[in-house]
Length: 221
Image 1 (cartoon, rainbow, N blue to C red):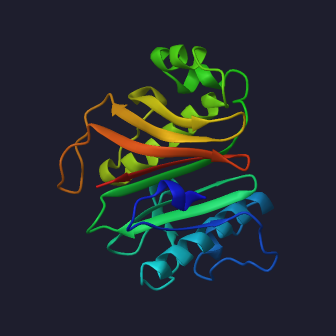
Image 2 (cartoon, helix red, strand yellow; image 1 turned 180 degrees about the horizontal axis):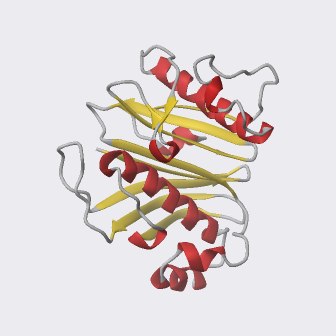
């Protein structure tokens, strides 16, 4: 599914059914040695997808470390993102010479828990949600905020709060349980970067809902 919202040049892989014999890369095992089983499966599954994407890019399927705030440490010259939720793990990677950052997120297509929306949204976003009735767009908003942070962090090494990006959506097609479209994340804080590139002002992304999952993706050139 995830490949449907990614541009050419981005490699991806996803995992819905978890192979019982799937094990951690030996060089990653210490990162999850004390983790509970669910955390282990999410960690192992997402990195398994990342190695498949690396191979698609013509790169060796190496161990993927963990940096500040848990961000993955990609091989030199690679940018990427991983995500997981119940029943789904995925990764999307690209060569840095082509794209500056990648941010993906996956969530179940279900309403946000009570009280969460007010803490993750801005007043204009909540006003938009009140005018829409199809799909669980509150969860879509949360998913897009997560993808925004994942695209932001590698370029800035700075926190980006839910209140620091105003997201607007275009719905191109929708039904009771599926849909797709685009979104625009306007950044509300200074966007100086650490890669020597232009400051960040906004991100544009794509989204889809299918098979009970919400998927969002930002690929920033």
